[in-house]
Each structure stands twice: as C-alpha cells, then as structure tokens.
Image (tube, rainbow, N blue to C red; front, side):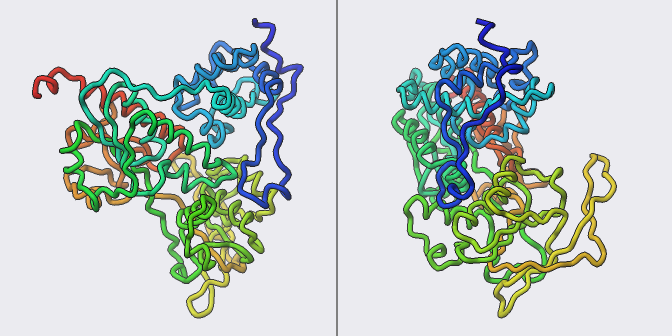
Length: 478
C-alpha cells in the first residue's frame, strides 16, 4: 500500500482546528478540535516511511510511529491504535501534552527537508480517542496470579504506568497517593485547556476496574512509614515526582500576593473539578481583575499565564531572564500564550517585589543580556547596568521549577540514599534504591522532566520489579 504514503509533496501539513483566542480564553476546554477520519488518514499519509525513523528514536517510549501512521493512512484504525498503545500506557495524553516539537515531530525527516512535519501528536490523540469511542480500549486483564503484591507510592504518570504493567503481569498492586484524586500533575498541575480531566479519569477508572487498589489521601510518613509498606508488600516503587518549588530570592518575595505556581494551578484545577477552594474564593489564588506577573520560562509558567488569562486577569506578563530561543518551555505553548494576550518580557529578571503594608503591588525587574557560553555551551544571563524597570503586579506567581522533597525524612527512612540534588539514587540497571526491594522511577530519580519520560520510567520499573520478584532465590526464601 506504498501508494497511500509519501504524500508530503502534494498534501500540506494541517493541524486540527484550533479555537480562536477570543473564544477559548473564556473557558478551560481544550483548544484543539479532534481530527475527522478523513483528515487523520490524509495527514498520516504524509509520512515518508524513512528507513531510519528519527521520530521513533527521539520518542522516549520508542513508539512505532511510522507503522501506525501507515495503518492510519490505509484506514486500519483499530490496528493502528493497538500498535500505538503497545508501547505507551497513555497515548491520548501524550498526544495532547507532549512537546512534539522537541521530540518526534522535531526529528521528522520531512520537517528537515522543509515540507513541514507530520502531525504525529494529533494523529496519536485521534487514534486513542477513536478507540475509546469505538470500544477498542479493552478492560485491564490481570495476568496469571503471581501471589505477590507491590506497593506504588505516587499515582502520577510513572506510578500509573508501572501499576498497569505490574497488574498485567499478575501482581496485586496498591497505589498510594496523598491527593484525593489519582493522576498527580495530570489532574492537579496541568490545566484543562491542555488536558481535560475526563481524559485522565477514564484511564484511572480502567486501572481500578482491573483490580488495582487506590489508597488516596494517604501520605507515606504520616499514615505509614516506608518500612511498614515494605512489610505489607513484596516490593515497593517510589514514584512521587518532585514537588518542592524553587523559591524567588529577592526582597519582598514573602509579601502577600506572591504564590507558588503549583498552589495556584491546584486551586484552579480543583475549582474546575467542582471543589470548594477557600483561597480561590477569597481571591488569594484567583487572578480575576489583577495585574499578574509570572516569573519563569518553562511549561509550568505557560500553564500559569494562560490560566490567569482565563480567570479574567487585567494583565498578564511573563518575566524570563533569557531570550525566546533559550526558553525551556514549548514554543507551541509560547505561541498560544501570545495569541491569548500574554506579554513576554524577554531578557528580564526580578530584582524585588514592591508593595505597601507587605502586600505586593509590583515587581522591579532588570534588563539582562546573555554572556559568553560556559563549558556546556549555555550562556549565563548578566544584568544590564541601568536597565531597571517596574511592572504592576497584584499577583506574582513563582514558576521557577521544582526540586525533590526530603524523602528520607518524610518517609522515616534515613537509609534511603539520595543524590546531592535530593533525587533518589537508583541503580541504572535494576532501578533498585539503597533499600532492598524498594525501587524508584520518574522525576524523583531523573529530576523534573516530561510526562512521556515518566511513563517510560514507570514501565521500565515494572519490568525491573518483575525481574526481581521472579528470582529463584526469592521464591526459595519463602
């Protein structure tokens, strides 16, 4: 069926229809429509089927992208879905929130030739949404009972991916999470305009229906120590993610009106889910009518600025100390934010939060320039003399990234070895920590990263746990 492919020279690259900024900023619904069948097959047919698929090698999950694009182009949609989900526990989520411009699509061969990348993410999302609608997503079926149990700490993407794979291998799995809903940042960190919460909820419901036990509102260290979980289970996986917000170290940073990005996003997402959030209702974590300044340049900063627009902020400014080319966030998200009215102050860094009676009313910032590259090629920002300026700000949101929490102290496990950055040390082959039978995966090992890497790490950890529990020496010890 090769004649159905290689149409990149005659078919233009097209993304799903995007709602106009004036319409989408009034709600938290996703901004892209779904592909219709004909458009998905047409766009998939643009794939060049190259012999060395860089899209696949630059996907952390190594998804078999060329083959499921070919199947989509040929109308073999159920087969395409089955192939896409064979390596990915949450393809419709990755299709929505992965920075494809930096991964698969950014490595697409026809993008390099100037024809515009295949819209891989949109087709991936289309296939799985179609699968849910058509009933192709089958229930989670446990494997042959292993007679063993695994406790997973953290119900974010790494924990969910590991739990699914372990259950398929026949293990009893219990997921522990301190929040009242499963999903981690997928539920409480990422706004609905990028990922509607029903998409996450149907995934977690499938796991629960498959026999995975969820213990929500459960905090390790408060409700049980790590040692107590080890006594309950044959193996334990730590997949907590990293939640300690990096602080803003400038005068006035402790003023009322200065808040952490995650606190702000959780309040917004909880409100959208129907919860009563006092700090949101009081206006403390609500941007309505306010001049908002977000400090930072990653995807979390983009989530904050775009949330503030939807809450009815009077103005929204993003302050980033490097230029646009060096911004760590997705270029696609920056473009969305600009369309929605966000002002970007590039090469600018905060020097103080100004205000009255310990309440923020503004941010004093300094103009920056990029200095000579360091040994790694990274240019450090330097302050421009005499380049100070002021911005009005009733709400200042710190989106400077995340570090690990002190898990040895929190879990009552001083023997849990961590790196100098606070991430849990795990053997790169076995993924086991310094404590026998305790494994770690996701951001708590690699540092703050992408959802797709968390899924990959969770799947790898499940395989490592299965290999560990399958050792003849362990079986003999029983």
